[in-house]
Length: 101
Image (tube, rainbow, N blue to C red):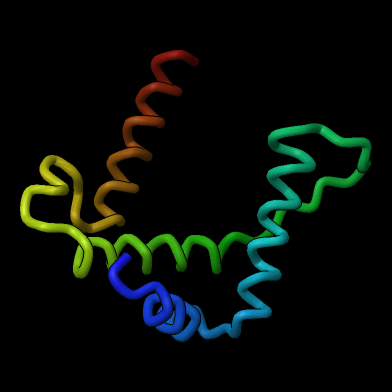
């Protein structure tokens, strides 16, 4: 990343949250991953975090990479618009699921 400090400032601004709130989002996602996805711990209640901030951060990061970090040809064959790629993956998953159902 060409300027990590500037990127983080722009990311937090885009998300409309401060560093502390961002760290809480990360902690919630990690807790869910560690306690229920990667390892089933003894907790009886699964707390699935709301991933709106995480999704918004991923879309921002992708746009930043496309606009500032790659050179022509680096993304050859990959969608430049993340929504397009996401929709394509959804269609592939649905087709696979329907084929195997």
